[in-house]
Length: 443
Length: 180
Image (cartoon, rainbow over all chains, first blue to last red; front, side, top):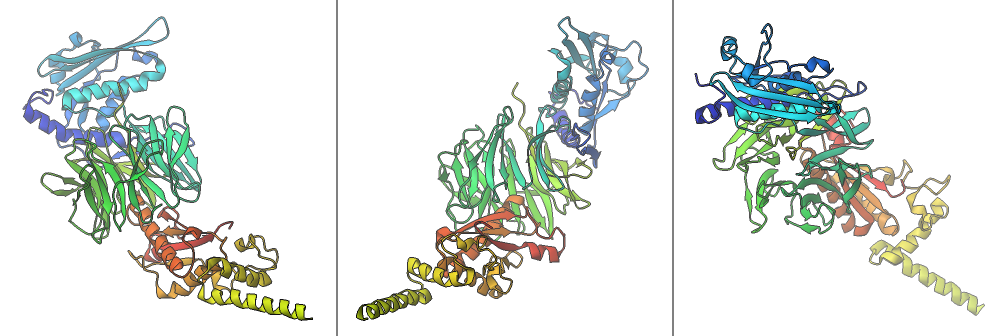
């Protein structure tokens, strides 16, 4: 059996990618608000990967000194992903803390393929020296070792960073444990735009309103959110800085202003405006200047998103009689229809590799999440509805978070882009919807 | 005496001039002035600002008189449809006439959809429904700049239910006058 740790082996890597999908799904489900007053999102794993990487995560040396350790969070991240199976580390004495202390035979006897060890040491200035190593006990090599100097407040972020490194080493894809997720929570009449870590911790209210909020969209650098607010009794597009909290209306024309999206370089936005009649797609600068029409039709054109190369837009239009997804080349203005299966295909989101889209497909009255591969023109339905909507793709392209309904309330769910891993994020007494997965942090 | 008679004749002629266009409605300013006078009789001095209906004191504005079609503010649509059904045409026509007669009046038409489908696509669907009613009002004599059309999509359902009865209630345009 090939070891899953050998990322250089193409065959291994493929199976890892498949497993990876599972992993991401679990990660998403853990949206747990900080405050007890807020409803907590809890994760339920509905489906898992067929083959999971067996990994032992040894408690870090001296980490019991602090109320919040590191290794437990690393293990939780990897485990929730669905791509890893945690191997029991009890009863191994002495507990290894460095790569050279790891005895491969001991761990192979427990069927572990990889072992993570580490240590935490207080520094005179109050900060903490955190070290870890990832050992391939099949090949008996150290895959990576790193050291961080951090404050206690950075423990959680450090753990996610370590999980990202391990994930990438073992699967070949970037980890997304350090990313954030935006979503709309509705409690009673109150709408809140929330941002939380990908595991649901550290939820923060970005803006709240007694009128609907929708369509949060991350700037590519992760510092701003565009969204639609009804606070002035009509849809208006706002832009808000996550660092200063400052916000302003950037599209507030006569009629409706909605569906913001960013260009990959963050220098342009597209919005849907009705100011000139109908719902049409316009290009503008993020400060609201330079508004120009991109597409012209006598029909509905909306939900435009840039493709990753910035050269074209995918969007929803009813120009063919039913809502379908189209692609428009921004240079030639040529428009091409992409979806033909069924009479309702909406909400296209391009994959980061530029090879396809995720969208919402209606089949027999059920709204399902589906993917379309540009090369093969094959549609794959990933979920079974009945009310799945608002898909958003993780920045590594492996997982899709989306909204659905359970018990009359909005909930969030995640599915791997191959459809194998499915998870639910449940927030008791809170309606959650409109998830948007943030970009990879800039390191 | 002659002078007085002359004045009376002029006045009659002026009234004649101003009432004729009201029925044919070619000139917005004149018909508006005439109608404002007529409306003023009912609403005790609904001048320039009286059209909103909120400032008319105890006298009931036609906009809020339950016996007046102008108090009816909702137009309902069939599934996946933007066609204004025949049963709502008298309502749309009455509001168009009111706007024509009150040049300072402004209204917002708010389009809504049922809960099925994408949030953003439903914003566009609601917009299309609001635009359909506006188009009809403009054809009937309202000015384009008197009417703003906006959409709430599926975000503000009147009926929070999840069945066909609720959906039918939510596929709707609401007419709201400025100041209401």
